[in-house]
Image (cartoon, rainbow, N blue to C red; front, side, top):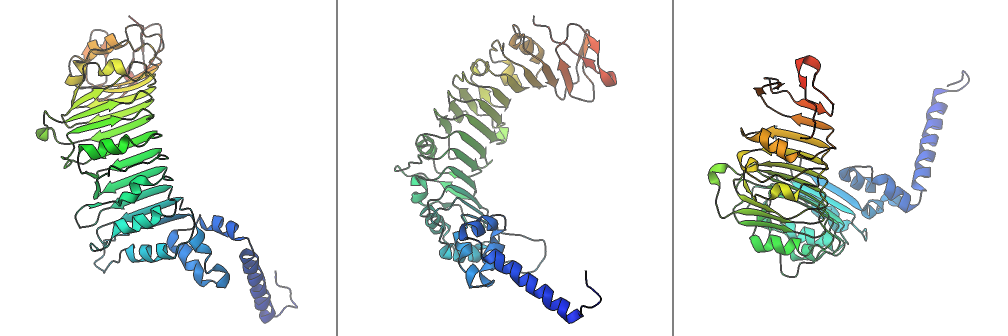
Length: 390
């Protein structure tokens, strides 16, 4: 509050002194604390702190996490890629360990730049996490061989126009998470070579593009793998009898396959599986359901192909979601739950079916079921179907 005796000029001077004192107190903080503060600031703003004073000139170069992204607007004005800023700032960067580097280069990125060289520079900084999204207008490009021998790398995410051409020398002893989004596979060998040289890989997420045709046999054989997600929506009209997905991961606890390609599918035994989701318009191994029978949570799209698979006793199943796409789904369901005493909830999606004392809403509403001892009408006119083991 300004007192009656204070003059306006004195008040302005007093405020200016307080602001300088505040600035001095921040600048007086130790370097490591200033670096931690800058972790909460966008990379483009971090770099601009170098103009504050001599004290701040090199602080930003020690920040271990950097993010760069091309911003594409709908205006007709000329748009500049973040590439030039990215290239220059990485040259000046001095942090001995680069914890995370996220790069998203879009169609405005120059097509004559060397992205592989930039990634190689980052690897030399003991890189731990790399997210590289490349959507430029040029052809797909390869990553440097040095990336595939990075001993410190724990997480790798590659997007779009990146060729997965893995050298024989590959060795990623620390890689625990691998995300491959619509990358271009050089061949079957590169994929197998990569996965077989990741001894501690726990999480693998794969999204394959419709144009992906270089890999005929998509083999995932990783003894350490705990979570696997696979999405492939290649048009059924392009289906080939020579293509397949082969999964052999005995330590797997979570599995999600959404495959509409029409390829064949083979899954090995998974005694540790807890949660599984299968939505397949492919041709699975007839033992596929038996290999996931230890699951406690299961989501199935019962296509004609899955209905033809031999079911097993899902005795430990607690939560089940069914999306029927074939007339034989009910018989399959009953066989799966023949000796189950644990089921607590059942959801049936997008179904219009009626027979005897069982009926579902014609609008395709999800039917939730809780274990009861007898039949009872549910809310909103739906029939709550209790499950009693056969």
